[in-house]
Picture 1 (cartoon, rainbow, N blue to C red):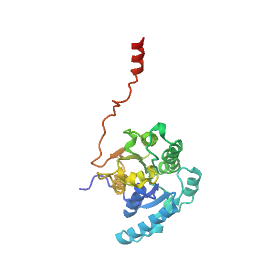
Picture 2: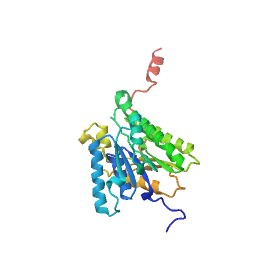
Picture 3: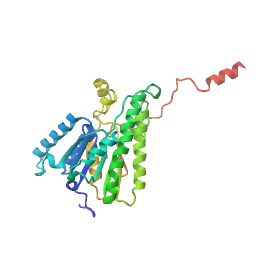
Picture 4: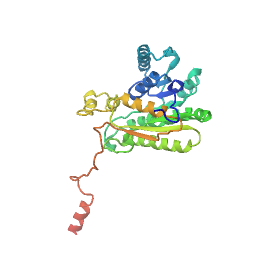
Length: 288
């Protein structure tokens, strides 16, 4: 049964996706292309962008979606979201059909290492802040004014359940994603009355290159993360992004937390075998 208000037609949308060369980004790009949208796919690896273009050509050839080819609906940009000047240059060179961005998917991000805070690499922390926070700020700041001027648009953040549920080793990564969540909610407050929507998508365990990157290429360790359970897939998250952005224009999904059914909440940690912080004081008192 059709609702009172129509869903947005993806064929009328221009979607800008960062980190589009793998995982959530690649799957989201392919999902929107399958729906008929125009997609700007941004990533750092040229060979992965070429692979995305080939996948789109194969998808288009077999799907019967329409006569428009790769050059008309997919534009790729090799750039780093942390390089604001490079981003400005890339956006300034967009072909006319891709200049008015309707949907921004701030997907670029990663985790580096799983060490405890006092054992972690400061270089890894800085790298995560550069991409996970500064990259989001750069892209949003560059594209948001156009959405506000056109009185339409949608900013989607790729957050994480790590922003809400702390775990040992999640320190800086969880902190960057907590920033993303709070930034998204504050954008909602700022954009009230502009018709620009904001959504933060918070995935749980998902089998992409995420763990492989986190463990710096250690395939065995990355694979072990998902032993004995069925994690989410990149396509699951892409479908969620597609759904939220094509809902009727008066609907805003503020935040959406998604976990595989086999993932739930851990109990609080209690260090029963560690020395009590009061033990020294007690001993001193007894000796006096």
